[in-house]
Length: 490
Image (cartoon, rainbow, N blue to C red; front, side, top):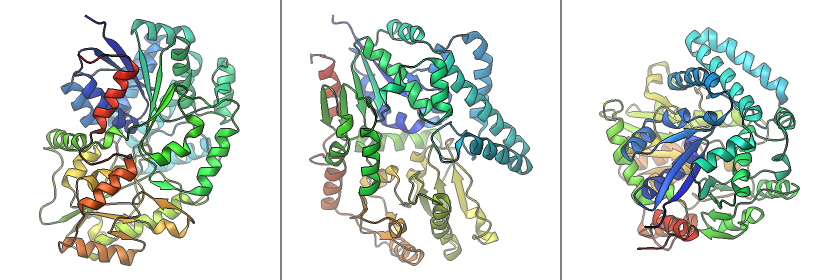
């Protein structure tokens, strides 16, 4: 009997795990494939999502934490248990800001953290303590990843698990930043030359390359908005790198991505396979699982229309982006002031969860009709109960479109962006102002929403370069992975 092959998925956030999970579940059914998952920095962020935990338990899927590979594991163990408790008790608050590139510098980051702690403590002492602990512990873990994770530890992990393929999501880094000592790594992070998560990810991946393990990079979801001047700027930035990291095999979702990601093209090959997260069978499976997991916790309010607002993390304007987004939040959320039978659910993006202040623009007797959800509630249960879905540019918006649920595309942000296109531009129900939102909402609640087969086929083809809705993306991915790993069909 042929020796089974081992695939290691390297995941770092809930939303890239979303794209891996349909492949992981289906690959687990293959007797000739062993699946491993390594979570950066810990598995607690992934498993905080109860739908993820339910699916992992159901399919006997286990996760390792990169923090378990650090030196001095016995010292870190109690610290990481505290971190697990903090993650588990975090509600709707900012999810621990990672040290990433920004415009404020380290002093600005520190002053912002201190200010948030003081204001937060006044509002909620317990919440402020949890937020403070998360900030401190996360930075401790980052430091450990810089100083306590050596090449030897990484190689031992790869050898002990007999890894035959590494799968990561789309991202890159200047390779000159990878092969550095711990002090230089720290200074690169401190001076914002490198995101510590990216740095750690590619240190690990490059060790795999040294061992001859093929690296497959897959999409992180289709790009909902294409802005020529910004895309060009990013491309120049990548091309200026001395040696941008490239995988052995690059998978892209559609033809537009194929053009924009030429600088990251696979060393051996590049494939056009769509995105398994948006395979229609998988979308329906997630909804069924979500209804089981959250059946006693979240139900649709009786006698009301539920509108689900799917948030994004897109930067619409260089300066004052959050303030501008708040204006659009007001347009959307203030609909509850106009319709007594409306309840709005807000689903925050997994990487930017915060409490939208509504006291200034929502009538006092209507404020309880707005509910905000962070990472402890999965998007799929909200989609299952929503009567209408609305978004500015979230990729999650694709799911209700493919399921033929009523949707409204709010593109007010086009007043700030010139020469921009979106994958949602051809939707019939869209609005550019509060007045148009009201009009579209009224049409939908009166039963006027329609979405035709021809539109869906065209949408599916443009976004995923698939021939028809019946063409399964998960199956195509698995066939290509098996081909790469030279697993012959029985």
